[in-house]
Length: 154
Image (cartoon, rainbow, N blue to C red; front, side, top):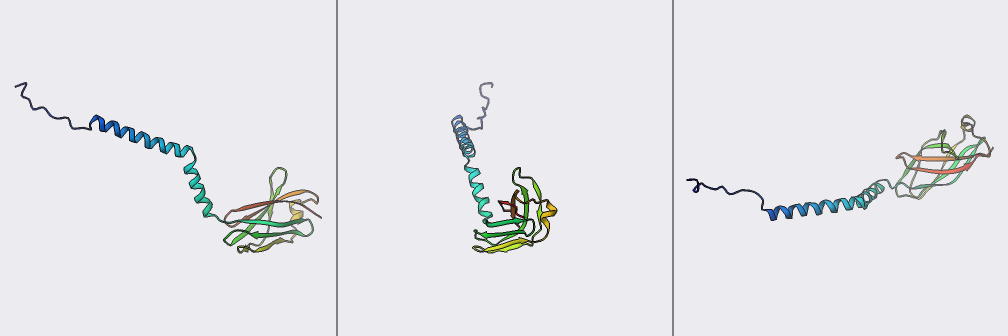
């Protein structure tokens, strides 16, 4: 009876099919790693994030005076309305924050130029000195920034 035993067939994956599956998985993993290392995925996410914030603007003229305050003209070069909510005074040599210049929010429609001003006596409170270079950092409500360097006058 030893020879008449019912032999069970092994239920499993054929060795050829298993080898082909391992090769396919390896190739797919290699392609994904190559795409990741070559920057394809990074470039795609960068394009999407840049399309989400189409704010573009520039400061076409700016002056900083101890006696007259801040006068700047901001031009919206983008396709959406922007709102300038803050102007910061920075040290031009090391970029350190000196203080915030108090302004009223200014909304600028696409293609137009609007003044951003403050005639209060903030300059003496922040220690602005005539003949010194400062950096003005303009910030929108969504966080887009633009910096310009000016020399303070008396």
